[in-house]
Length: 459
Image (tube, rainbow, N blue to C red):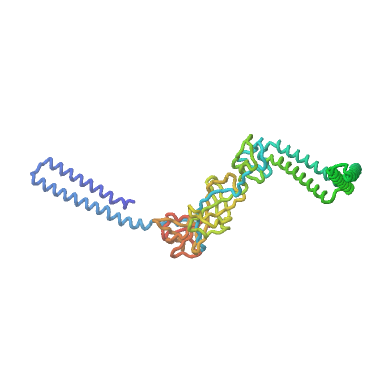
């Protein structure tokens, strides 16, 4: 340290001597006051001496310092190796990520309608309620339906009574009554015949007019018809109903039974139930409204399944098939990540956007994902380019260039690479000097220089 500080000590001593000489000269000048010519000579000599001494001092300050610094620089130690984590390059197909925008839709939307008319007594659901199959939605007044049921049951009883009479046959009392009717008709017929005979004799004798003979003949014909009718009724009563008549009456009974069942069905339909499960999207009626047959009650959407329709860019139309995996995210559910497969591809493009749509079915959608919400799909497409794949963390960006540091013999080797495809956590790269299985720096490459010593740590 004393040798390094020697130039500074000499410089200060020389400066002090120079300042002392200047002061002595100035004092001498004041004491003796020489002539003007001698004063100028002394001032010139003093300026020359000052410049010379300062030049010598500066030369001695800088020249020894450079010579002293040379052995000092030789003794400075090299920086220690930098600790880095490494990985290896792997060959593989380059894939790229495509972000698709879409919307959630319900695969099933049903409008519940009334199957019978009536006044609404109660509405049991509101918008947003979840219903199950068979659950009551609304109740109608059933007074008219009950009256119709009573009429149908009375008609059924009458038809069954008629069928029983045909199957049992005619009672003996009725048969006896019809036999008496036959006897009475035959008696009237005989009387009419006797009357005709007498009138014929009287006409021959000229006792009566011909007109009375005609009337007597008409009376005979009428009496004979009544006799035949009575005899037919007696024969029917004695023979009983035919098989055709019994079959026809049984058909009448079946029709009456159907009318009763229809009336009961109309009563059951006054309690309107859901045929499938879902969530009530909208309710169209309120208590007190009168519904016609087919009137809308409520609209349900399926809650157990959802369809997601994603739009493909025009350049990808026809390149995505069913079964392709896609990752789903939604702004409404920031913590949710869904992995699914494309269920179907719509074989046409939208007229406005020129984009083809693909459908993704979610059988168990997350809670809070509703129809109409926006959703994003991340699609990984494999390319035909074969390249080297490495983690994105291994690349370093400097001056608009992608750099990769290989490790060879404990030193970092800087390689300029080109990114072929961005695959999310990994990237596909290409470049001169890259090889499959090559060891490269994964972490610790920031600030690393070509040829720097490195020390591998970790895996």
